[in-house]
Length: 245
Image (cartoon, rainbow, N blue to C red; front, side, top):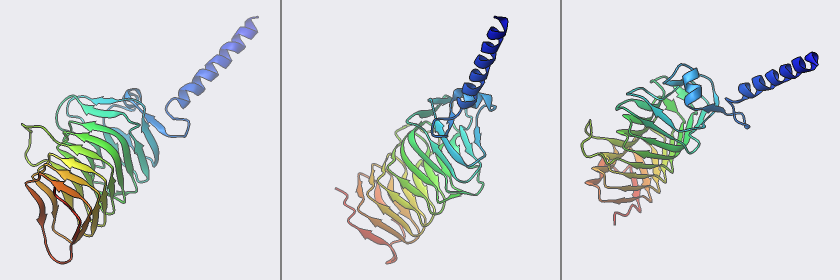
């Protein structure tokens, strides 16, 4: 009998170890990120150092003015899983690249509220930011060359902001900005050269769209901004069907 019990305990222990080993990954192979896994990795910022798929499996509340998630690799897909990332203090970056050059990263599907900068991937080329709800982040989205920023909802409504001139979306050259709703910023959308901007709703900002280089701006709705457009008005720019009422 004792041998049977010992064997059963061995099997139980093995099963527990297997379940524990798999607890950090989803069925489709994505690495799961939550308060427990972040604590086990050493706390915030949670560092992504390898390419692959990562997914939040709970809401995150980051203490003080710490940064939340640092992406240190190319080829990273970060799915917020419909969860939120909030901060209990002030300042800090939610998801950023520390100024190190990367490519092909993606962030999508969740909400981020109350940060110094929500998505700051300025050094990431060909990165994608989609389907996020971003509220009261001082700088909402910044991406590098060749970025795709689409289907996000951005709002800034803090009356007594810690800093002046909050910015909605800032993109480097050869990017696409489509289907976003942007309101309440000093500057709603700042464009790099040769950017395509279409199907956005840009309302209630100090300046709707700012640009210094050629751009293609077609089919956006602009209304209630202090100025709808600011920047270079040369013939290199294409502005068509952008109603403001």
